[in-house]
Image 1 (spheres, rainbow, N blue to C red):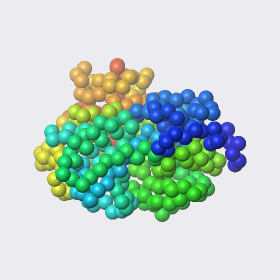
Image 2 (cartoon, rainbow, N blue to C red):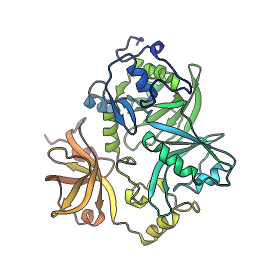
Image 3 (cartoon, rainbow, N blue to C red):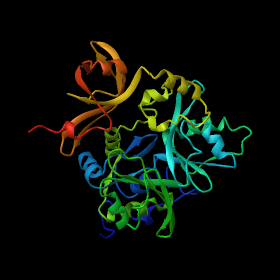
Image 4 (spheres, helix red, strand yellow):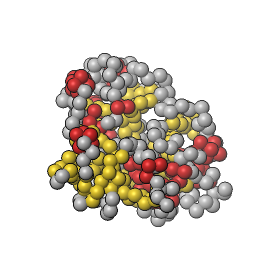
Length: 383
């Protein structure tokens, strides 16, 4: 394909500002570049403005699930954690093992307070000269301030890497599209990084957490985001907005801090066991986590739900026999390829209600629990 792709933007029309960011800071760097010469609608997503839809959400979700969809990841921010004590210090601040990470590998973790309540979540990657922390723009300021409070006599610095942004690509054909654009990810294992160059620019390729379809991230300086975006469109990756990305998140069962997880939640209540390491040594909030582990029980858990009828608003209570037993935290009506239109939700529920197989409703509509990630086969449309 040529540069005349209908979704391509002329990078000469973009004005960069110091620090590598592009135009308004309330928008992602890529969204600002796209908006400079098009009428793509923006919407708030995880603390920033980004493109909501490019064509239509069903087509974009289908690309993410069955083909290859490319999307803005500028709503994720990077923090570098440097200094001689960085590994030991951060290992004492998060629920997963930092010291066990090999170079260019990563993991997911919670940050807790002394009472064991979740103060934020992040992905941690060990690079040669620093640990890179990745989290949503919506929580980066509060989380940075919380972590910084615990740097006392340690040789540790936290710095927002605001010259960098990221573009994501997901789907069964993502590897082929990246290769066609000049980026090879074949040898990158899940939760691993590879540092390379692309068209004279330094980039980092990451094989991201992906319980349903292959997902990759390309970390790049903000001034190069538009060129990268256009290169992926030129090899026929489908541009996808935040609406389809959110639908994929719900299908995967990936919880969002500030949406599904709050600062009242305990780690085991989220059912995100990939965030926990039980033999890593001491860390903030560990006593509560170990106490829950030794008792072997929490009263609430997260799971998926199929909602029959109209889509209720977020935070609608879940009822069993007229009594509240949980709530729906994330919902979306979506068209799933080979399945049809469904209203799917993530939410918290009392464990005894799941174990008793209680009849559930939300806003008067029947609700059926589903194991995460959502199993397409069990949801197939009957002939």
